Image 1 (spheres, rainbow, N blue to C red):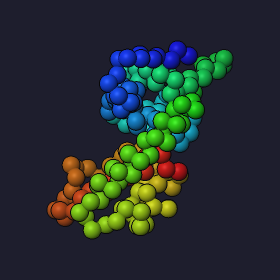
Image 2: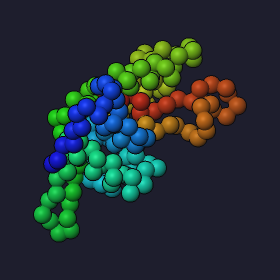
Image 3: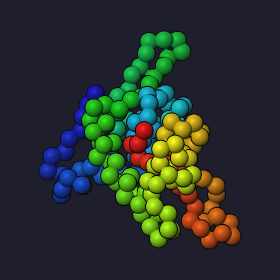
Amino acid sequence: MRIVRRPGAFVCGIDAAMDVIGGKWKVLILWALNERTCRFGELRRAVPGVTEKVLSSHLRELEDDGIVHREVYAEVPPRVEYSLTPLGLSLNAALEPLGQWGRDHIYRGTGEAPGHGGAADPGAEGGAGTAGSGSGERPGARTGEGAGAHAGSGAPEPVVGLGYGQR
């Protein structure tokens, strides 16, 4: 594994962190791998919308940065599994407060308080979309279709899977 370090190329720590996690898909890949070790196809299903080319490229970059470990098994057919390194686990821990901020921001002004249970609260114990709840939802998935409101209700669309790093 080659860890890419470019000292002096960054303005601050946030700049360096964003270089590692920047883009639409990397944090979703990290979140999926936080739950368990995955094969390529499992990751592709866990992050719908990502193309094979982009997923492959992001996994390679995350591996180069020391965030993701790629394990190749000498079997026929070949089996490759991806998991987080200790550095990747520490990155997910650093992203947890950002996930909490996102949940708080989504519920701001709706009258619903995050963390108080209920089906619309993904961070609640046993609530819809909580990791391991068996709901079948993927990380970062939105329930329903549309751009933020249920048809005709005017209510904000519930967001499932924003419990970044929660188990």
